[in-house]
Length: 138
Image (cartoon, rainbow, N blue to C red):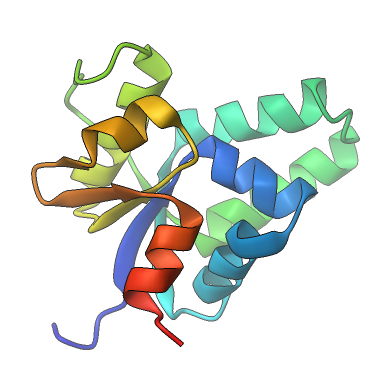
């Protein structure tokens, strides 16, 4: 459908940036909250994001549970059935798997290994800034 929102997977580094630092990643999250963009993720990506919040940023268990609830309400959860081996870091492959399973148009990431491949099939791999510049110009 022409009016369906763009479907995107946020890599865990974008989730972390939106939660901890704000800026463009937070703006993208707000686009998802307001249904201008459809966020897609998988259980493994949610787990990775919450683990980093817990371990690296010492977020409380109550806040972790609240964040988990928000993510599962806002994002479409997919259950990838293929194991891909496109990039060196296996965690990065989980991002591509979720994007492919969710029929996404974009993976938004700050990960250099993912950004270096630029695309996988018809999925564009971009930074927050590139996504906002190309999709929401002005």
